[in-house]
Structure formats: structure tokens, C-alpha cells
Amino acid sequence: MKKLIVIAIALAAPIFVQGQSKAAQKQMDKQMAMWTEQCDLSTDQTAALQMLISEKTEALVANRKANRGAKEKLQAAAKEINQKYAGKIRELVGRDNVRKMNAYRRSQRENS
Image (tube, rainbow, N blue to C red; front, side):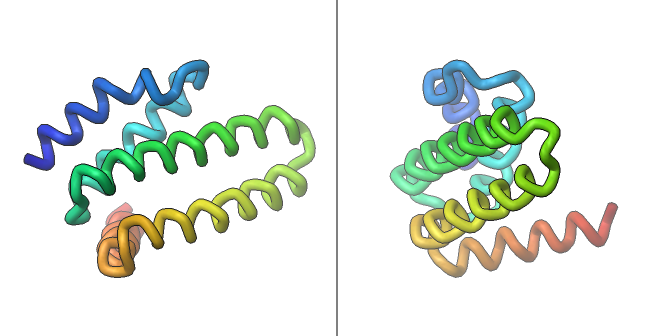
């Protein structure tokens, strides 16, 4: 079932992310795949998460364009964007799923 959801999201993703670069689209697809594989998300949560990750990606891409060449401004703005969306994602998916994702990310860092 989760694989079917991931495939549906991958096919629908271009509709949500019109105008983004291929790299941004690839990053968004990667994040959605991680969330859907590692967490127990309902269909509604998955759709809402897709929109949040799309908005976050768009904000980060706009930040990169706006602060090109200004590393400190870029990092500060990216940190702010990430914090803003982390709260929204936590609220959407719940603390248990956030814990699962954090444990998965920790394991990936340790394995690399």
C-alpha cells in the first residue's frame, strides 16, 4: 500500500511543483519517499505533507536565488525556513512519526 502511495505521489508531484528545478523536484520526491516508507501516514496526511514539502522546497529555492553569494544570509534564512516548516510537519504527522523519521535519519548518518 505504501509503495502505491509513493508511486501516486511521484506521478502527481509535477502538478504540485510547477516551475521548480529538477534538483528541487528530486529532493522533494526523496523526502516524500522517506516519510511514506518510514512513517504510518494516512492518505490525508500524505497529501498535506506533499503540499508542505512543496512549499518548503519553493521557499528554499527562492532563498537560494535571493541570497546568492551571501552565505551567512542564505544559511540564516534557510534555518528559519526549516524551523517554520518543521513545526508544521510535526503538527501534521504527529510526534511518533517525527520520532521515527529522526531515528531513521540518525541511522542513515551513522551508516554513511
